[in-house]
Image (cartoon, rainbow, N blue to C red; front, top):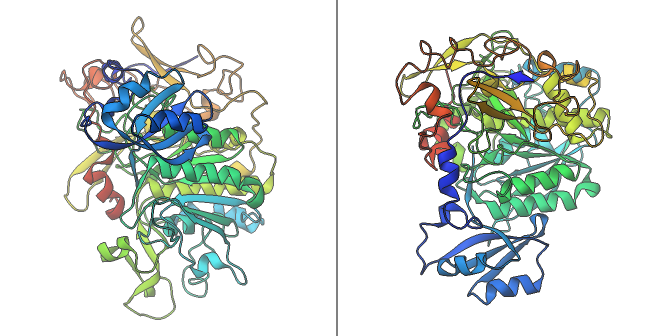
Length: 572
């Protein structure tokens, strides 16, 4: 049993309020004007047929897209018909078609991927599905003869173009698989983690970086269908939205689980809400969906500090922290470089036009002293940039051994991650000058810092029938402690992957450094949750803020303007 004393469960009050009405209807539909027509995702108890679609049509609805991956459909429906439809015994859950948003020079050696490359691990033959804003046909992804963008498709209604008008997906794909062609003959080479992997570009975000649950689910559905044809072993989701309900009914999370169960590693950005103190929690419990799902490999962001060594790297203050809202899943699983990352620039993209200050001077990497900014590379920050670091690492593991399951890939990456951190660090927002204190606990850095070469040399294996699902944090009022509980057993037993055996023990997976009070305590009474440390003694802070019943969680906290802007400007 692993003990996590002191505080941070997440508002059971919010959970109770969410289900105070009809348990089949998402709480954020309660405010819908009954006379309006809204886009919803209706999950049924079996894959929907025309008879199921007719049930919606008979109530004034219109069928827009099949989402059979999660036994669902995307519909336009009068809000006034929601309660009547929910009364149908074939209906399991109704939620809005919610909006989602997009949230390398030093990063490659910092993760020890450069060592892997020396031994021939470059992602050859492995397909990585980038579900994002599209990917431009840049030479760093085209290869010497043929493009490694082997498939492209748009899931945006009324927009079949697959180019990257926003600029996010191209940058992400470059971190996964850029081969540095445009920079290879100069002072620096910008290599991705798996520079010979193939990219499957599934566009779900428009020119402003906006998308929807239904588009992402449809893209996940397509990735599964194309798995064999393109040897898709990894899906990268550098996007998300706030958590509105338990992952067990959230359609986005359910789609991620289907992809995972189909044998694809799903890597998800943790979110950029680590500075959000709107609930008095200093950014804890801000992991976004679908990174809140226990199966997903959820990634937070580190700062390389502009050096190729790992020893001086620090957590990015904006990186979202766990545990997850409502379900209290221990997240993130891992952290990776995500701050001021140089990668591919999409031509004429909205991000590059809006933030010219993030350009990369050609003199930085090319021979000569040209002051002009590069048209090929660009600098971005956020957990969106950290996730593809891990996706690339997963591709290398699958190149080495194609038989590895998603659970084993996740376990090896977590077990071999570097677990040596300082106890805390300070960061300054370059735009406002405001400072932020970060504590290096299990809900900030997860199992540690990505180490690609160590993962390739790892030997951990998740046995058949077991799962590497992230555990849940549960508060025990009798002992005033928090315990990590596996999702498949009562309290982490020997039958669980993250059990008490030597392989999966505390020091093997998370190490002692991320448990502030040692092996038995993540949060000791004098550490981050103590009365004299970060949280102070106020009633609105400390213990009751995260684990108590008085916390108030705003639905937009995880996607606040600050969270989006910090992903552009970075962290000093």
